[in-house]
Amino acid sequence: MIEVAVKGPGEFTVGVVDPKGRLLLRKRIVISGDPAIEGKSRLPLVMQTRNGEVAVVPVLIQRKSPRQQITFAGRETADFTAQRCREVKVAATIVEKAVRAAATEVEQIEDQVPSLFIGTLRSTSRHGTTGT
Image (cartoon, rainbow, N blue to C red; front, side, top):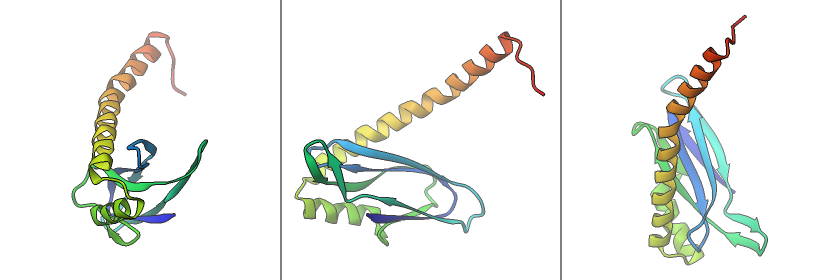
């Protein structure tokens, strides 16, 4: 496991990619509060699959606030990811392709959320739901 540390409020998405370029885990983290707020999470370096253990590469998929500082094990995310690619013997291009695909998917999901929420509000008001 590695520690993911963040300084400052905002939202970001991290994940782990296997040597075949599959995103095996995606984690969205939202930190709210004072500009000096700090938070921590963890990501695995090895995951268990049906075929046994597989070494994975932690990646930063998306960061909403450019002022937010995010590190993997105390290092810049890109530096840590590049080193882990070398350790696991996976081409950086494979990992980059997986990150691009995951970022696109995250953006598509976010684009749908407001319309889903508005649809829920319309449905609720049509059915005469009242507050207490």
